[in-house]
Length: 454
Image 1 (cartoon, one colour):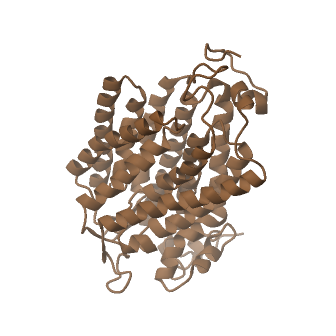
Image 2 (tube, one colour):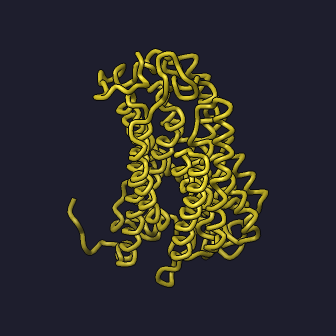
Image 3 (cartoon, helix red, strand yellow):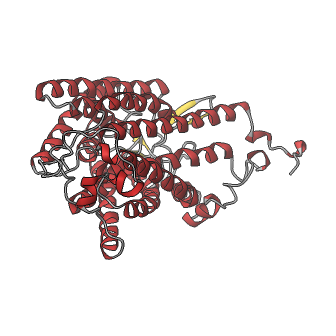
């Protein structure tokens, strides 16, 4: 296909549009760094005999969610803007599925009257597809080393579709819950609470891993191979997320006026400083908890808890408010962690971080920033989608928490019934003891620890 320079749609390929393209592409790079950081944390904490299998399942689960999003997910999320313009969800899906006309259009050949800023929207598919994959990686932390691979992979595909529909309702500026007042700048609801809701079901349906919660006749202790690897993984996540924050902003004239994805009044500097301070606050409280309890887990949970709690409000918090939220969040995670530990529940990541700190952050946002205008779309002055017509409210924050967790719970309940009737859900105990690396891949660790008595 030759290029007809005379037919180029100049408005689609301006220098200003290129800057935005680069900005949103950098957000995708940041999200991929988060994936690497998560895999490093997994490599440091999975049992040595399951190390390769755990990492490769997360990696394959990421790409299953990623590819599924390209097939149909973006069309679901973008449907909110089609509905705003008088179209339908199916119109959006037809345009933006993997074979859709806009997914496959060249921006410089597309009339801006048909779709302005096409390059940016196409890059956004890549950006959000990465998060569809991240959801599966996060979910795997709760079922790692005990859920059957086949069941996990089916869940990855289903989760990508369901979370995409959930993002339509809860993340953006004109989705149903967002337009009614639910505020979630960073996608805490559909990225964190949704997989935590699935984990609530699947974790409680499976037995604890041998040696994890109590001494086992053949596994005297559950030993992680390299906890030290988790700290670089944590910092890699910290380094990648500022670029993701930039991709959660919309930019309008004059030049580069920033508003958040929820259409709240914000600025680049405020959003990034809020991000920095929730990490710092969480790290400080996590440090105190770790040294007071002697439990290394809080050195990692602390900064992550601060981040997750603050993420929903990076755009609207004042820095001092973000710091307070970051300081308090690890205390909530501590309570959830200790609650699950005392009851022998084998889930120490998603429950304290997402159900605990994530829900706490959404609630604090409803308290600190109640009445803050947001929602609608820039330039619309009246009607159901008028710019900033909605306000943050505590009631809608609670509704959003229930909706996101509930969607995860219902999804997992349906899948669990299907799995138990067909392929099965849980890897048998013998294979868990011997190690899934050996069972599936015929790989054995180079070191046998004193916890492996068999």
